[in-house]
Length: 118
Image (cartoon, rainbow, N blue to C red):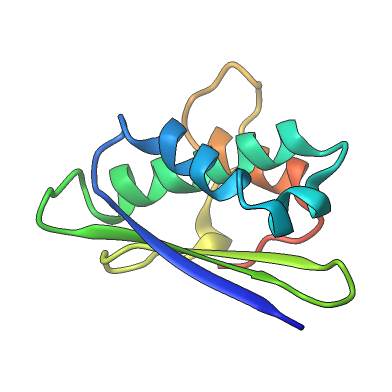
């Protein structure tokens, strides 16, 4: 049986750790993360930070939505959606150094997850 849940978060950076923990604490999801908890934390935190900062531009009247689906075959998919205008992921430069802040979040998400789509 597939489990699908959605939660929302206000467009501020401070609730990100609690939001990630709320998602991670779901027993059905937790069983699928075994051994990859840090990858999950990093990727979801970065995606939420990008949604707040770049998507919603820290606009408190907007929300960020997280939907996760636990499939019967142990597959997990996570959709993070903001209320911004979107962007073209093909036009993002790859960071030359890991110390560069710009576009590092997307690089981290791609490094931590099996697949990332925009």
